[in-house]
Length: 290
Image 1: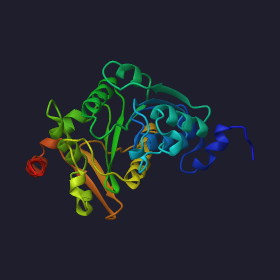
Image 2: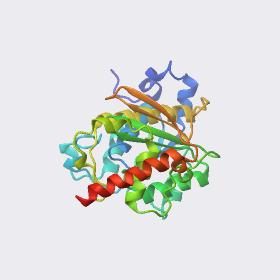
Image 3: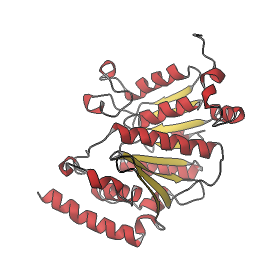
Image 4: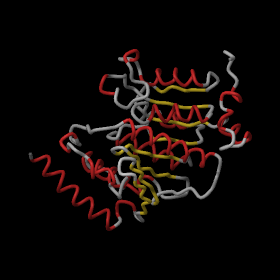
């Protein structure tokens, strides 16, 4: 056993699913991930093990006990430590040669240009309720011609969408605009998962509270997100063709053992989406009235 790092040896077991030439391509790619929490941290470690050579990572939060059920960097030894630094250290343990640029402030209009400068792909790791930051980041990706992926943990599954340059944009699909955060939450949730596979086994709906920006989560959903996002990233970065982009999406639920391919032309303006949003608003008002 060698204690000296060697990139080719460290990622040699990827070869077969990728060629040696493709592995070198991945080695020279740079991915930006905003958010190092539930999904963002696992995205980072998964992509690092895929052999991606450079990252821009951003988060302004610290690890807390409520993160233990799902966040890759959350442990007793990291309590109170900055998420972005902890995850950068973990990544360096996997690939000491990785080029990691850390953004320890909130990702917003003031640093977005720097955050996305020179990157080949953006992978969304923001908190579900970070609507303004998410809108601004995907808008910047569209303007800068950067492919972007969002994969959300829903129950014990994941739903995902790809947004590629020249195709339907995040805003064109979700139509979040300047709506209230409650309305944005509904639009994001239903836009991501028109099939709503996760709703059949939610045993305690009271744990979902859009007004207080909290909801139940699972490590299974986060792990599935990372697997899906890394696979989509591989296909995009290696130009493996026939990438499904919005308004096409997919939703896999491990608990129900179901996969749904979704298609919503017009995004949330699709007639079925408008009906679903109307029903969701009524349900939300009833919950808030209790």
